Image 1 (cartoon, protein in one colour):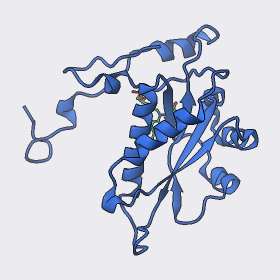
Image 2 (tube, rainbow, N blue to C red):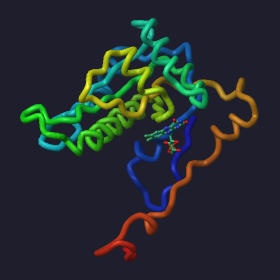
Image 3 (tube, rainbow, N blue to C red):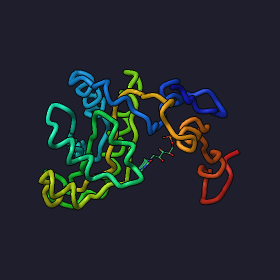
Length: 197
Ligand SMILES: Cc1cc2nc3c(=O)[nH]c(=O)nc-3n(C[C@H](O)[C@H](O)[C@H](O)COP(=O)(O)O)c2cc1C
């Protein structure tokens, strides 16, 4: 399903086409090749000192026990994500490899890598939905995430499912237009609060 952003100016199509659905086709798998392509896109993201602080835990039908565990981490509000054939947990290394000093841009860099991943997924016809709503303590324990690494937003990945079986409220939420605050509210020229145009 398309939900192209109603942009005020033309932007790259990929950026306008990306959106976060809550309906995934549970029967259409994502191939390892598709996953590797998205990870390759993430790999070429910029990062502070080229630290590349991202790590990705991938959960899919290849290892069903861990996919079940990842699904078990989701909050009730994100139960819809259990339909996604793949869950991904990006993790940030919080210190620099070269000197073990704190890397205050680690999470920023992982966010950049995730967007590259998501945009590449969009280009492949896949859909991704990032989620804060999961139990990080459970994820740490289930997947052996070591100290010094911080789990980020979990990502549901897959192909779009069908709206037909959804209850009306959920259906309306899915088809509602995407909204954003205008650029004038978040971009300032020369000093805080000063208008750009
Ligand atoms: C860090 C982060 C956490 C999010 N957490 C959730 C979540 O727990 N559940 C959910 O349904 N959507 C979640 N979202 C999705 C946002 O609600 C969504 O990106 C936003 O409404 C804009 O919609 P769009 O991605 O379709 O443009 C999250 C997005 C991000 C980036």
